[in-house]
Image (cartoon, one colour):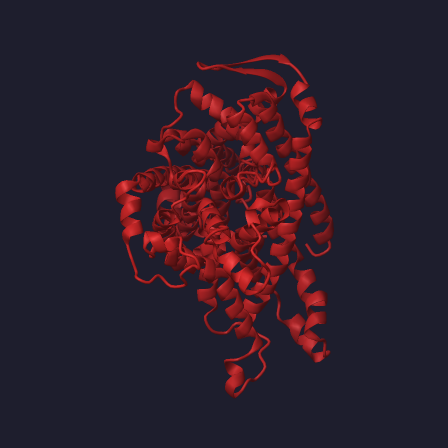
Length: 281
Length: 316
């Protein structure tokens, strides 16, 4: 933007690039450390002084994590919970976001503000009553014990994102569909949705990431080995005195890379979702 | 967020032209409630109902047995226990101080990063994508990674510190370094979030102000404080609000990294509440901790919205 004309070496070696490089190192070095450690041999993970590069490169940690430890199971649990909850959030959120964005409902402003407050409410406030209620109905250590709370907790933010997208779609096509006698549900399905898929996508990524990373409820409701999600499995792995970091990082890399890749590829929609509040104001 | 709420009142609905339009409008409104009902019912059942229930629990004597639980009597005992407990007061103090310091550091670093990336001509998209990775990372994994870095026997931090001649302190073994270690892990994970939000705000600022400033010969420092910062204030306020709320619920990081220790030095309000309920099985006092945390958050939010509205009132 405020570009000064630069010549020769000043093009490459300037303050902006140097600062960018520092930022790059700040973010990338801890990530490198996790990935590099996962490829060390189990003995080298605890070497003093630490090995800077994994020599020799070994995948033994990966085989230990997935054949001798139930990390595969944890990943499957996380996928089941996150996929089902995200699907529910998108279906319910689309209907509600459409209604709150485009239908003339009285009091929808209040509803939206309440939703916003719920979406930032500290989880700890609901964990104990939910725990007792889930225990009462015998749902502790089950998939629904997480699917239901995740759906409810991540719906408000998804509704906000979707509503903002629905608001931006021109009214003309909807009007003409209405005049042609299409039902509102049909209008939503065949006129609105095809134009709103970036919004659906953004809401989907956000909800999925939130489910994938949530820890407190997963720990409280589903701590039995068979139902642990990745965060719970990772947190409770190892004993008080020794944590097998190699195994842990192998499992972590497998848990982090798919989401990281997804976010990396679809960075535009993620950024637009993150800034939805700021930009749409 | 705050800025969005302003738009809710002005959503354009087709203006009613005839009586039949008015009937149609009402029909649409009913339909709207129908469409929203499933989502609102799920949200109410799983969030609002438990919040109310939590308040009730915090005001009752809760008896938990192997088969179920029962509530008896209305009592302020849970709260009086809380307010007289040194643990709760320390947890409150720790959570507030932790929130203020981490959010302040993240805000400064995040703004600096955003200002740098805004001037970056090549590879800005790649840097943005890199920033998103810590944001999308599971906090518990982040905590384990830093536990490995801080490890007293084979951690890389001791290696770096002793190479710099700073000795090899046991980072997680003493309160102040342990708190600092926790903050570093938090800053690494969440500064990128602040940077992304501020960068998005920066990109949207009108350029003519800067041209005028350049003509007037203002330097970078003055330009930032006189033009960029005032224009960015709503964006920064939004980032701060999100981060404060998140930091106040601090749980995942200390659970893995310090287990609330050494002693109780890193026990946040959320950890105290969790331990009271699930370790000691004292659901009444645990609910009192949770409810008081929620009330504090609510008061903080409302106060923030007031100040914030007053500040941007002129521009909006």
